[in-house]
Image 1: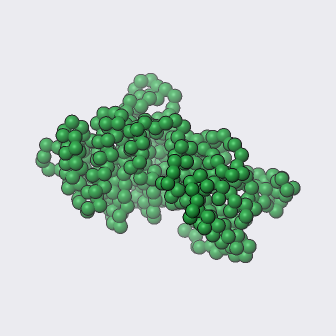
Image 2: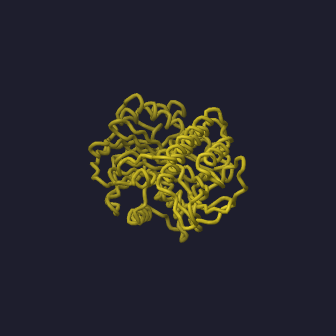
Image 3: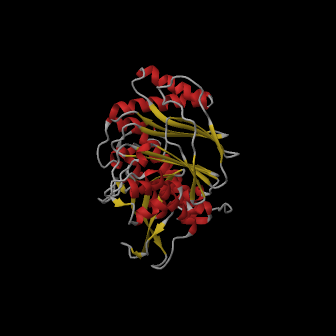
Length: 425
């Protein structure tokens, strides 16, 4: 990682004014005020023009404009094939050639990713004055913009809890009640720290019936889980959200994997009396050693990606689905990861997707896709976005069931592709 840079002179003063303005004004702002506040402060501090916030839709196929005072009506931008989409998919600043501005001076248009930590929320678009038509934006100014976009993303994530403005913008169609229920309990789609990346995806975006994923990073280990509730619709969503809540309670109580399995099983059985069940993989990754341990509750086994090859299916002696346990020991499987390994947890709807020729995608098809993305150097979040687009949203491919994936990388270096370029240098 590069040495820390220090802003000097006019840029430092402008940055201080920008961050002070955004933080001061967003204390009492409503969700629908955010776009106007950001635009106003960028104009005051940096002379920015045509400021526009874009948020990724739930299916991550398009970027939706956030309306605000002074903004013009814009159309949804595709993630694939647009400048804004390139900034989103690469998590990097994208710039267009400088053009004459309305004041006669040259201006350069930039698209800056909105990153809440490493979770991609959307893009900040704006124009900035430059010295001449061929001039670039100063590196110090780019650094300020990337930090500002980070701040804006955190404001958006925070204000999203107090209103429905952003949620309404991000959905192209209404969610079912079951989907609303499941989405409310999901963690952010992407999380990363040094040596660790975890990213999740769930389809269909608007009509999920009973799949979910969860994770939590403790000081010593990363907790991981995927769930697949029995059936479809609201009933499946209800049993799955109960399982997630029971799992979190057990996890936060400090129970080990067998005890966690027993607690979730008891919660589901106690509420549904054996009429419904949830299959799941409950796992823990020791962050220091790479030791992965997991319990299978009648669920498809994870895949181990080493380098650019899927080298193993991580099998465990399966226990009964949660809510249907008939007693007996719970088997905990173990695998010690090597630096650079990645593990994919998934639900059966993913491998049961039908190809155009009517054949199932299968574990082999899923493995081929992972290997192609690994060979291309795609980070975890972009791999799963492309999985949605290439496999789940392709004409001629249909889902027979909900499909969920949770991809974790250990000491693979993928976290460096998820942060702004001036953080990594």
